[in-house]
Image 1: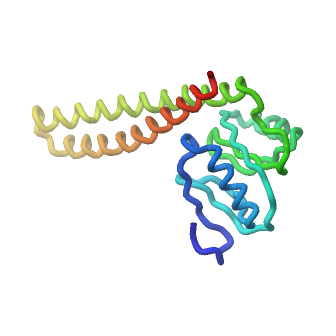
Image 2: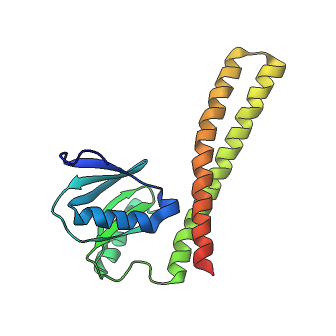
Image 3: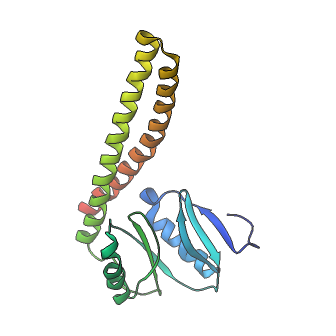
Length: 184
């Protein structure tokens, strides 16, 4: 975390795929200190200075069409949960301590994690195929074609696709473990 004199700061996370409960508790502790969640960032949360307030936070994962968003948020609001922010299919809500949790049974948790496992598996497979294709092009450009331009483009392609592959595989295995834990 950065200097407390600012109105906003970036808070790094261990990753929602691996430490969802710990990250939600971290947000609760920060809210009690006057740092309220503003939005998600690629490597964590952006929190803003506000009035210290005890809040519980909860993550829901769901792909929504724009037409579904209002009804989705109203459903949670009816249960006492206020929408804080969303990023893609990640939606964070807050509520007063003691509010009935969003996910109260194994079935809803299983549904939540099974959707993410399917999506992350697809992303990991696509990244794996891109990495393999770029690696093959890299090898062929060096051994058979002797084209420097294709070789350099393929090298960049291997690096970029590997940068997509590693996090997508990590997210897949992280949520797959959570799915296994909630299916037994």
